[in-house]
Amino acid sequence: MAVISFTLNGQTQTVDAVPDMPLLWLLRDTLALTGTKYGCGIAQCGACTVHIDGAPVRSCVIPIAGIEGKKITTIEGLSSPIAQSVQRAWLESDVPQCGYCQSGQIMSATALLAQKSQPTDADIDSAMNGNICRCGTYQAIREAIHRAADYVATNEKDGGVA
View 1 (tube, helix red, strand yellow):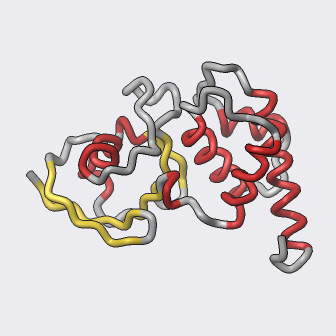
View 2 (spheres, rainbow, N blue to C red; view 1 turned 180 degrees about the horizontal axis):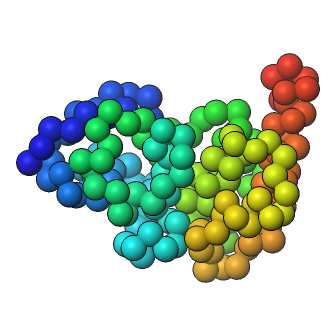
């Protein structure tokens, strides 16, 4: 067992757990944050995507020993104006079908827009590569990301008034 301290969704956390436990299981089983989904367990599907220090990562392969002192954001803690724009665009573009991949998709899309405010289709394809949608809503996802980028740009132009 090891004592690990980190920031989770803006709150300091200290846990005593097996250091090689994947972050995904700490989130879901120990901390009861079930918005982050288990999909494949080998970092290939993207359902378990969270942000570590702002970057999207697959939590199923990150041992908790590697999160000491880091800032972790899960879908439950996503609240920035960019995230709100992504969530709004997701609904307006009818992206969710079964919904299982959605938290990972939204985490990746939010990270993309935080880095690149007006992504091209190629930027979107690159950033979303590895986020698998069993329902095949990839065109709607791309549309939603472009829509969210427009919302963010409009919000910034209007001085933060959405």
